[in-house]
Image 1 (spheres, rainbow, N blue to C red):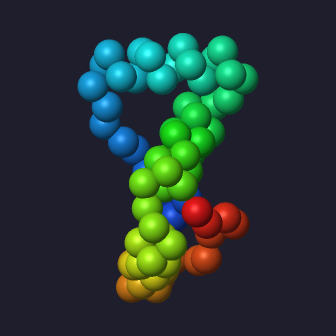
Image 2 (image 1 turned 90 degrees about the vertical axis):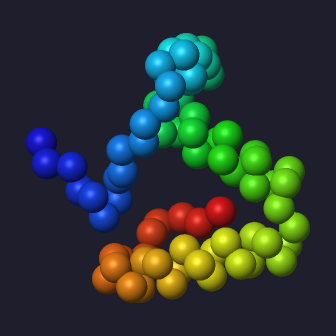
Length: 76
């Protein structure tokens, strides 16, 4: 299997964080990536203003264009 690096990236986590994330994702019936996405979306909604969210999306779009990657299926 070849990893599509336009769609997926590896992330390093401390082992104790990984172990807890793994258990929580199993309990909640999600994949690790699904659990991380949920945590990130919650953090964005709780901590970023509308202006900050717009800036985040604009910067991510600029990075995507610079790297020549296709537009993702979803955004925050």
